[in-house]
Length: 324
Ligand SMILES: NC(=O)c1ccc[n+]([C@@H]2O[C@H](COP(=O)([O-])OP(=O)(O)OC[C@H]3O[C@@H](n4cnc5c(N)ncnc54)[C@H](OP(=O)(O)O)[C@@H]3O)[C@@H](O)[C@H]2O)c1
Image (cartoon, rainbow, N blue to C red; front, side, top):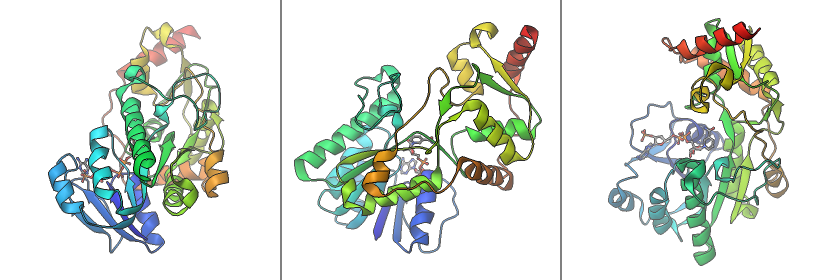
């Protein structure tokens, strides 16, 4: 397959580039050439700032691809020119959306046909991704534009550019306690980045994907306390867990987010069975294995943060120990 990736050098895109190259596909990436990455031999690069629509049109118009993967569109203006350029010129257009397009409801697991957000009251990120989805589906209805969309929940693995599992690795290697809001019983799903790359390829190659959106996350939900045990197992050592209630410490939910990178006031559960029955998707990497890979990368790449301001965590730990 002749594949084009918008992005391709940071996390999801980088893993997809390697997945495609391993399978012998012809890969071209489009980015600004600013993010350093180790790429497979033979990958072509088109250097372009996608915000510069005139250059984008000049460099991509008239080119034909079996699959275009847009890994990193964040606002509708990122997507509009690509529909113009590739309508009639690509076999499939695969969009990386987000699970944040769903209206937050307490019915689980969330399925693809659950209600979507209609304004930015849950944040601009999910709302803009939802507007992008609407634009792509409108093009699909109008011209048959061959879109397929993935809505990932929490993605993890080597090269994760979001400070999530690495936040915990940093505490473990420094021998510091990990602070957990609430009692840690809430359930969360984590999807391994190479499994996501494989699902993106299925979206590009299976005809059943056209006009559809698919959730992506880990197959099994885990309570946060169990997840932390898996993190410790991946690191080969453990540190104390300190549970706390933000009200007791006198901090806001925004502060909690600085020390704990997941939702905790509700579960985070996505139904991923649609990708299984429609596309034949199968998770290949368990959470235990995936966290080991992520920690191996964390150590080898030397991404440990040397200086971290622990003052908020110290306040939390102090308040929690005063309560005991
Ligand atoms: N992390 C999660 O848990 C999570 C959950 C749900 C959804 N998602 C979605 O997953 C995607 C993750 O993306 P990623 O960062 O991993 O993708 P990526 O394709 O691996 O990396 C981002 C790429 O964008 C390029 N880029 C940035 N600004 C650009 C510009 N103005 N013009 C052209 N290229 C530009 C970067 O290269 P240069 O800097 O060299 O330009 C880089 O190649 C996002 O769509 C996100 O919304 C993530």
